[in-house]
Length: 389
Image (cartoon, rainbow, N blue to C red; front, side, top):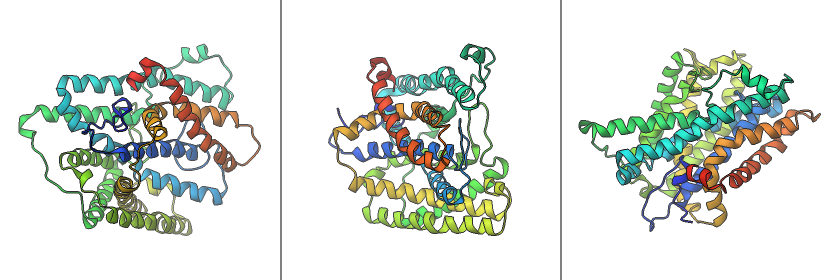
């Protein structure tokens, strides 16, 4: 199997010359997918956020690192997915043309989206209500009153990516808009300034749509969308300007050190000041206040630095191909779709285990990652499934 040919994942569609090794892009995709599973595992057992089934710990010693973990994840991981996906849109469009490109996106993004909403989402919701919260009724009784038929759950990303692709097609169909932005990979200064500007934009956006506010029924948290939109556009710009050839290991290490400083020192200081001053918890979500401003700035500067660090370091340190990693990469999109089923099943199995939820996290999180990849691998042995995801 060609390691860079990941067209069947829909999250990433590299279409480069076979002589160019971009295995690290597939490896980054694996890392992001693992972080998605861990992110939802942490939310299940105490970190801020919403999820299907939760048993939250009240131990501050556990909540603090869990919160730092999900905050660091949220600063970059979904935006990075949009960037990585957009990297290969222009080559794919040029190769396939409008009709074939659209048909491919509807197949690889649209079919999983419909499946999740109509099949998987009702099953997940029933599992939680019946086995998690003790509402004892049959599945058919539950479905007779079911009315959440547009419930994308984690597939909000796929819905947004499909919309972004359609916008790209519209853009390409207008001759006056067919121009290229000439821009080299950002310097260290440009990365920081860009993160600062994106932080201010996010802060202003959250005055209207605070984080946690969801656009129903699509599941979009618009407070995060400034980053998603900008990163999608930057992915296209990066492709047109060969950013992958311009990555520098020294710059990556500098961005890594800066990101570690912001995550391990600055964010805990923000949280500690927040606790000392006894600010209401909802101030982080948005509003005209210093907490929302400082958090938005921290989030976006940190996220941009993490993404730059991962791209640069992975190119030089994580570009070797192995059959094992190729297999994980091929199954990554299926993991993204089906990891809620695995995670919810595991968390329900240990629901009655009489230990602190933080202990359950230590057991469930790695099991959810491994179980999701195993389940995805088995599922993709079915030919028609593999043809789509």
